[in-house]
Length: 214
Image (cartoon, rainbow, N blue to C red; front, side, top):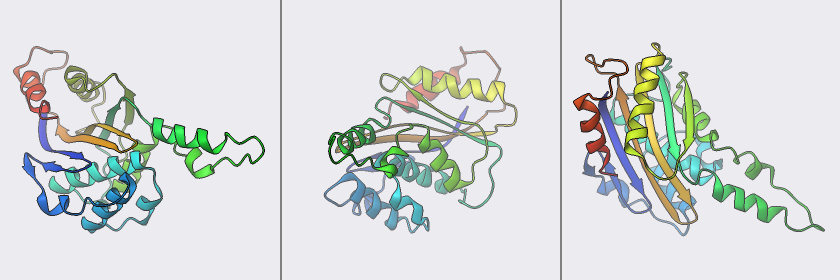
């Protein structure tokens, strides 16, 4: 696989293709992660009102995808049937789960929040990114115990090997819980010299070393 573009976002920094984005970092302001993400999204000058109604987990995913895809020359309108999405996370929507649990604790004043309930599925972030960017290829999210470089690579390689229609993959690892946020996203394509099933390729080691910037 060949890395086309990559970025890392935290609650205080942004790195795009190895370079700090200080102009964007100056917009990471607010009392909560949601406010910080809203201000950062406004700074990208993206026109997508639905963003502000999403939970923080999906906001972080859309922000990372926005930066990577824009850097690679993709717009949000053009259909992308040859692009897929593979995401990894440890906590998933655990924060949304805890918020929903709080809304149903009062037996007398039982008032479940339907908007929070709709965000309790970790794969919702894949749908949000796909909808925002018109990505119509296969998408999936996996729960893992931390960021596993080898699994990250091999799942991408496996999708290229098993789905010939996929030419590019938006891959990422994201965590968003409480006041902690971290995302690593990259756009990759299948290299011309890829050999299906051969995990001894030097490119795998190169790819894993690259991902250690996380």
